[in-house]
Length: 638
Image (cartoon, rainbow, N blue to C red; front, top):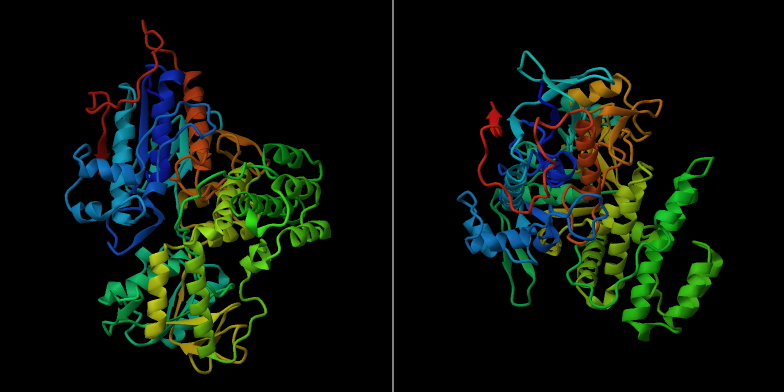
């Protein structure tokens, strides 16, 4: 009998998380039936491309070590069993204590890493590799894992038959009962605007770097001392900043008052950075949330989503969803303010909560309630001001803008590390809650993801302190809000202007787009995904692959889920915040992985008789197998 098989395309963190959930659910749903798991990825399993070991040791994660885990816990709302495992911080401690062995070369990173530190990405790569090996070892003996260090280029097969996955350089395909795409962040062909800028640069001998994963970009064309325009002020910019400063030999010293000073190497370009908001993403919050937490979800939870999804006229994000998000974030903010800082309010929490619940989102009644109950405007949540901090702000010249932005960043750093502003952390938890709920609705436009990243997924505080030092040293210059870049054919340069300093401009011979490519299936460079879209897989208006919210099955343009094809990750309209997550947050990615793993195993079980004379397998303990059996060929196909 042909052995059942599943092909997982993409062996990075998302594919690894799926393997972990298959291992956790196999005893209950699949017994001791045989199964071949094929993992296809040209990069090593665990970290994949983005989290591979082979990148600069200067690049950090933007999450604290104690806030990173690949394992479920009792907060995750899933049907499958919880299989506890260590966070990145606990794993590093176990390695230092000798309980876990890793490859040599990480001793310095491990010795310096505490729970409240930001790990180097290469250390996260080692953690993910260990999670992968542990997950493979936890599979039942008759499930074999085959690694294929190749690129999948085509997927074919009838809806009611086995699927064929073609790999680059292989004359015959992998044949599978089921296929799961866990592709992670992908490259895409540039849109028309970017292609026009690249063509302009080619005509005039300039440099244009379109959106890309910064660690993969060739930065050698950015020459020492020359101005470089940078469009984008998020995490991709932070990576660029690090690689072009410390990465070129610059160093920091700390003064007696704790202020950083940058010592240039002389090899740095001058980075002129701007964006729509004109400011960097907010710093990571540097304290815990003691005491009572906001009871979330409150105004944007399953009941509200059920009502929205039942509407016969469909859902409009601005009309139906955003007001509920605003009210949910406001509830978290004021719950924390009233319960942790009651001296800054005029009424008691139960009275305020009752009236807050009765008021419509954004209504005059709600504004009046907040104004009467919270005397200091600085304690009131103003989402519009948060989203557009430089709206209407004008500076007399570029130097005044530099001073103003440095004061803004200093104030942000102080606030994000001061528990007196703990309502900010409550809003962060509400953002996570909202993100988890939005998975059921799918892609609803770019605003939410950008707003979430800006408030909740910013850089470590030390990176913003480095940014301040670079600004004082003149290595980084701020452009301001609503930055625009034009190509001047007559002068043969790029020109940047912003609304923050009317009439001012900066010219340069290099332009860097500091952001990831848009995850669009129509323009993706991934041949397999592009072929699926061409052959009828549905996509959203923003270009994300449409999948069933329940289990990740790929939808066609008639809305029918494919019985044998699944997809998880940022290229889908059910994208979650990341493949790994903070512990105890009911992480959407973990819920999705569990649902998809159970769907895979159930499908195969119903079509695969148990081996002759076998008995239902008893539940297995959380302990993992440490050695493969002959049927478990955990070998790379090079």
